[in-house]
Amino acid sequence: MSGVPGTRAGTVRVLIVDDEPELTELLSAAVTEAGWRSFSAADGRSALRIARDCAPHVVVLDGMLPDVDGVEVLRRLRSENTRLPVLMLTARDALEHRIDGLSAGADDYVTKPFSLEEVVLRLRGLLRRAGPGESADQGPVRVLGDLVLAESTREVRRGGTPVPLTTKEFDLLRFLMSHPHQVLSKAQILDHVWNASFDGEGNLVEVYIYGLRAKIDKGRAPMIRTVRGAGYALRAADEWT
Image (cartoon, one colour):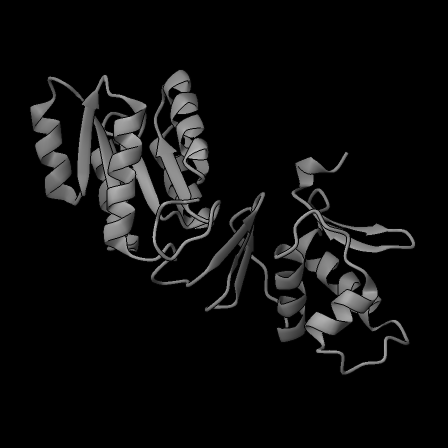
């Protein structure tokens, strides 16, 4: 259970931005335990890039980062998505930093050291106030590895790079991403993507899989695989062995 109205377990994406690996690991574990999916960045530039790629529902942001100041990262995040909830992490004696963060648009803050339970509770509150677990600009977003699909805008990115797809290629990818890791037969794909309007003869599915591979996997580690005699499966590139 995600504990947030309008979301399913695992659909809430939390971006954790902190340059302390041990703290990031603890926060990621707490986020996962809460039923959410965590993404992490150790510096401001990476945080901004990852935020564009994964479209997080909420951000945990350290006020002090090694490159771009946390407050500046907050301002840039706010300029791209004014409704994105942000929880700032600040040092106990950094009153000026907390004021700067709140002035820049942080929704809440916790001071170090803090309990993981407190962070999760504050994130739940921010998510509830923000509404359903969907990006206000993109609608429902599916993420698998470095592949991101935005349903309402019908946009696809891999590794942050836009991937232009035809209508049916998008429908095919959406069906594959809605069943990650599963082997989907040719008949299943025809039934769901073409609404059983074809009798299954010919190589329609093979042609579209080939075209989708050429766009999604070209020059990258492959995500779409053929399971001989069974069908096709989609996994994050690093999940194939």
